[in-house]
Length: 109
Image (cartoon, rainbow, N blue to C red; front, side, top):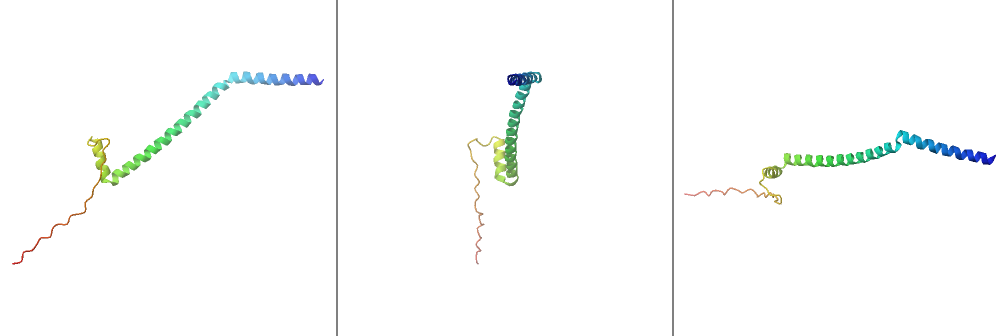
């Protein structure tokens, strides 16, 4: 009797395994899983691209702010856009102290 019960147990296990295998093939679970993994990879790539674009946006905002506030940055950008600066050239700003006008000497008669 016990042997019969054990054999039915294994028959049920095999039947469930076969049923799961057929269900998996019919529903194309392997294909759906591959698509899911591909989608996860694509989401990761898009998130990385978004992060890169945000960093680029921040850099461009900083560049615009520099152009709004710094005349030297404006001059450098104009020179770059017009081709008046070489790629390895650096632009330096030199501010000289204001020159006082010489005081005129008064001639005494």
